[in-house]
Image (cartoon, rainbow, N blue to C red):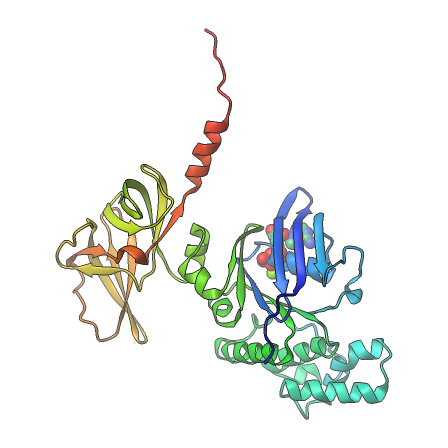
Length: 377
Ligand SMILES: Nc1ncnc2c1ncn2[C@@H]1O[C@H](COP(=O)(O)OP(=O)(O)O)[C@@H](O)[C@H]1O
Ligand SMILES: [Mg+2]
């Protein structure tokens, strides 16, 4: 099994991309290491495909640089870069059989027939499609087409494989199976994968690191557990997994212990680097939220149990606050439940929340920096 090395394979340096007046990628800086499985995650339209196409060379950067193995590839055509792309729609040639589809890149490069036969054969076994050489793409299922598309990209032995929502067209069960297969293949071959998806669960299960993008901006990059447990921004906290998010102001500060005040109550959290009166977001995962029939010291959040939703082995309890905000609390099935309509007091362990600075803070700082204008009457 190959390991991630320290060597930087692909680097994006201060990359901006405009389409007309529309800036779709904003000062992107990213280093992807050799052998790494890096996922670019974000909602539709956030710039993932554009970024991938700039690495592949199908799209030019407006400013900044794309560097592959230490070399600025700005002037290189896609086929001159040591990367291959797998697209969401497979893009197989419909009039060619599977063998010719996989062999295509090698035939173009005038590789000897015997070597082509050997390499195509290897690829077919690798993606478990032995015996399908003579079939036409129309005779394959979605999952099989996707395997062929991957084999066709890998047969060129690229150092980097770019994958743009490669499993997006498959049904859930097949997608889960292909996730495992792809991850296994990546480890086995030690090829650097740059994988694009809008599916946060997929990114958490497959990646060495996740780069979360929002409106052309890289919000956070890190390993899955870090992204999940220590989201750096409200967007990341909201987009990855489920979160209960409170807008709050910091009431009192005692070392790392903060008392925070929001519309529907007050609570205690533990976090460093915040000051009195600062506006913050408090993010609490459903599995960290607790409730009690009696008031818990340090907390003053009164809610009403609205309903219980059974999700397999987990029960999700919805608690409604007086301002209409609905909190999600997950419990293991079998835990005694409080009946809908009952009043409960919500609380959590002090260190089980994430406290985030708000944009308001940035705004206040900006306003303070604006020179005062003298007004003469
Ligand atoms: N060829 C293009 N011309 C103009 N705008 C484009 C083009 N391709 C993408 N865009 C715009 O750039 C933004 C990012 O698109 P894209 O990279 O495809 O996002 P994603 O893959 O994350 O869904 C979107 O607002 C999209 O409409
Ligand atoms: Mg896309």
